[in-house]
Amino acid sequence: MQEELVVIRDFIASCPPFDQLAEPALTQLTPQWVIRYLRRGSAFPPHSTPHYWLIRRGAIEIRDADNQLLEKLAEGDSYSADCLSAPSAIQTKAHTSEDTLLYALPLPALAALWQQHPTLHQLMLADLGQRIAHAHQRVLPSIERNLLSLALKDLLHRPAVSMEADTPLQTAAQYMVAQRVSALLVTQDQRLCGILTDRDLRSRALAQGLAFSTPISAIMTPNPLTLSPEQPCADALTLMTERGIHHLPISLNGELYGLVSSSDLLQLQSRNSLYLADRMRRSPHRESLISLAHELPELWFSIAQRGENPLLLGRLISTIADTLTQRLLVLAEQQLGEPPIPYAWIAYGSQGRHELTLHSDQDNALILADSYDVSQHGSYFEQLTRYVCEGLAASGFILCPGNMMAMNPQWRLPVQAWLDLFADWIYHTDAHKARLATNLFDLRYVAGSADLVPLLRTYVEEHGASAPLQHYLAHNTATPSVQPLGFFRHYVLTTHAENTQLDLKPSALLPLISLARIYALNSASSEVNTVARFQWAAHQGLLSASGAQELIQAFALALNLRTQHQVQQYAQGLALTNVLSVQTLSTQDKQALRDVFKLIALHQHRIRQAYLKG
Picture 1 (tube, rainbow, N blue to C red):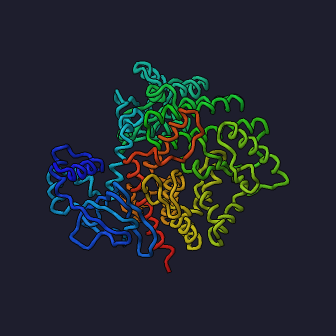
Picture 2: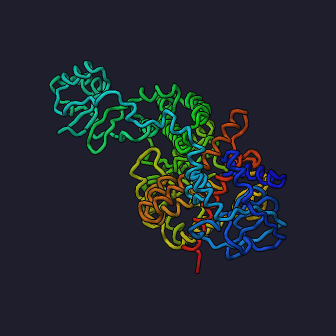
Picture 3: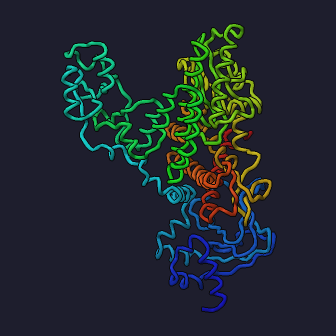
């Protein structure tokens, strides 16, 4: 092979997806590439028949119709827009910003290559969503093999053990002994209506001196929570941790499949969130509770290290934070006495969305009954909230630098005052109020009187789509101060600069969270979790099913890269951050992130068109 062809072949072999080709295929393909040279400032692609382009040397800038920089291509990058059957949603123009050497593959040669290598065709010309899905499968392969991702049906090794609701207590107890079970599913006309446990028999029957002939319906727990057999074990673990329950019926469309217990899940991993949360609920004082909370980082590390779904990790940490908060409130009331009026403790921000990380600060507030009188009740709730917030801080959830916590009287208000504040944020908003709304509208009940929360959630759902607020939220969502575009040589390229460091939080995670929020507010959604919001938006027709899935996978990709980075930091004893060094990213990770940035930019463009034009 001529020396020039060897140079071309070696370069092509280093560029995805051609790096997937075997040597004979590379040798056959090499002579078909055309070499083009463009001087700085030349239009790109050159006016000719369509080609697939590889940049050998130089740089190309791609801009939108308003001359805003969208992407900058350098050595090893490809350009395939000429080959796409569907036009881009954003009109672009491009030119060389340096003298540029290009390798171009004509479409007939490309078509022949596709025919011989269909997989390569999919990798080369997959649309944005397909590429993100492929990257999602690549970077999260271990999730499918993780025990917590097993379907619940895989834990069911025997048929459902059940009895009818009118069965006498003695008969049910004898049957449980014979079947060697600690819980019994209770049915009425063969449909689940309750659950009976050993504890129920002890505390509700024997201790109360009930007759053996009493029907089990008198002491069962009615209408128990259920999950379907296809749901992952992780869902059961999360639900049991949140609710403090130890038995979970598995049912679908009225058909009983069986029962999963906490011991079944404990066998999947020796130390898990269910075990930690259970010990927290029984902790007798704040010092022991804080000591237990310090086990959370090691628990997180053990789960994250083996490749568990980062979406699950955020939910587990949030659930532990909820449990910690609930126990601190119990201990505070034991010390201060019964609360003088009802209250509800709420989480917002990342904890409200069930997306908490180990190094997150606190996001909490207090909703008080409208009978609140600061002169009579203020001192009690000042002490209660300080006890809890300081306990959370000692447990690893640092105090909010902006003081947006329940221990600040500004975030400790009666229901009507909260409603008035929300109304002001929605209808008389400005940039500052919109930022506050961004956080507080993700509120979720954690503890206390749950009936104080629905009025606020309903108000957000019914009024969150108002034009004044939407304009500011759309502006914040669609025009971030720093917007990453991709990677250029050894730097991350943004709208303002090039940097060797990439902060995943403002570059990928917050934009996706903001997109989910604005879609949720425009569809009167009660969901606060980012994934659930995208799913709801698709259900309501604001997004296509495939569009929602692309956004969810992009979110999971960014979370996983952050988790991998933080696992390495934790193993080295470093503080956990969201900041990655560009030079540590693989070519595949850069491509995946570039596609995430493109997807975000596409949806931000749609938000601008919908809310900020005219």
